Length: 196
Image (cartoon, rainbow, N blue to C red):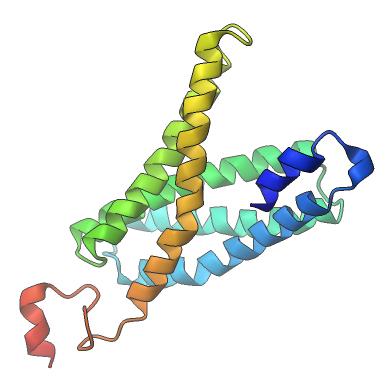
């Protein structure tokens, strides 16, 4: 929300300061830092296949980068023109991680179907939105097709991005469940009685 507020009220108006931009950078970094323990806990429950390990490493690396870039930008270690492409690239890697890790979770029944479906939508929506917006720059500037593609891609990508924290909350809730109390994570329905 602070990012939306920044572009609505402060972008291009230096006389108003940059409090919302700074808040967005720091809150975004804090949010990425909170993602890391959940991603590690989920990774420990997934199969030890090479593709899953590579996806896990890429996702965790993206979260570390997103955690670091905000403070580095705020404290003038990285200029905006350097920090922004790095953050965007890391966010796209995070979206790819969401898509891959939720597919693996669905196949191995580690997470509930609703959680994996939302995670895949978050990842795919973010990547599809970015692809549409990026492709729009190949069209004539300010043409109706370009404006339309940017609009559709922006709505799709922003909607998916705003749902990512919801997915992490659902993930944390599911990972915190104790087998034998409610739904057991990673245990097929037919095997839950054997645990009791």
